[in-house]
Length: 143
Image (tube, rainbow, N blue to C red):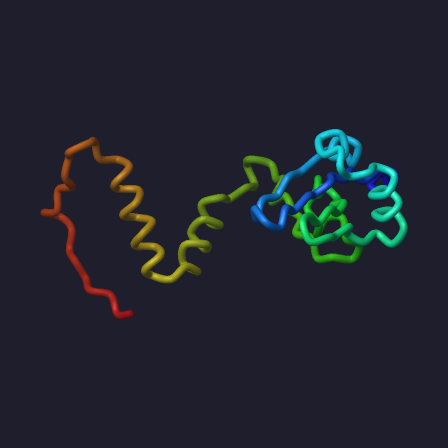
């Protein structure tokens, strides 16, 4: 896969203990140029040997990988969610969508059907217009 060919990118994370501040550098050389009291060779040797952070009483310096893609997608065997297309190909003459729609709405609970009807009615009304309720009979639903 192309994921294994891609080189991971890293940044240098610097945590200053006294100020409780964090700085991020794109590489170790820029950190050492900004703070000349720290030796590039010393820090590079320390960080590359055991992949541990360099730490003293003033600062903690560590390399961190940049996460460019979701972790679940890069882990093999994970249950990454895939969107399956909903597709039904039939000739228009044989579709019988009215029957399928009727079966779908009969399978839904009464409350959901009532919400759908209310939504459709509200879409048909103009702004400020009220529904003519002289024809509508209200029935209280059991929950």
